[in-house]
Image (cartoon, rainbow, N blue to C red):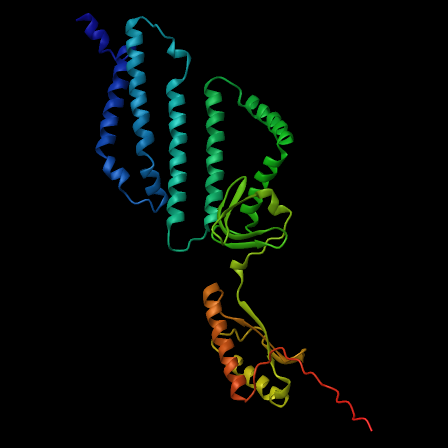
Length: 352
């Protein structure tokens, strides 16, 4: 009975290990009981996302912790075959699983924010960039804490990282340049995911699908993926048609020279029609004037802005406008000009 009292003594190392093993197993069973409530809950808020992300890291941590206490208990009972006390295994497991938990929280919030249909304060590009920064910070903090637990000087890691980072930057300046280019894209936000962009300097045009640390993926209008290094955006001009406020109609209407007397009335009628159209932005510049003498036509300039910026709707509105203008020209008894040539033949005088 003496060994039993020693085993149940709270100050005994065997009792402490057995109690820790028992606590880990009970905690694992309790966690398993609440699995449904943890996994199937809503992930809309930060609190709910944090609770949802807890299950897997907590489960594996308790499994590994129970295994560790069981091995340590057998090791002590068997005569200390392994010197486990030299290493802070439990602390390292806690740091790794806390980092995993942090990654899961960030990933969950990022995924839920990107899937929301209602507009939020941050666009998709900003959400992705902030999530990447948080993941990078978690990885750095995990490495520094792990070095400290192993008895290594984190300052050495920082110094080595600085020296190796400088050497790496010198050896792979393009990679570093692309990384900083990605940072500037996240900060300046010349475009975001889903925008239609184009560059007059390079053959780049399409819809932005992904902005990474090194490259940006663009889906061109012929549905081909285009991968552009981020550093390139520091040296080229980028247009973002997705942020336009109006679309422009700039057309030249040509009528025959035979209809020169009707040109003034046609210009006034077109101007009045456009000024009263619901399809045209009345707060923008509207120009309808006789613009010059063409080679075979009298040219009338029609310049205005539509209210819509949608590409398909714009062409529908432009079609309506042009057909109505054609009706105005026809209603004034005029016709559209087409290239013609008049040949004058000289008649020779008869000989005496």
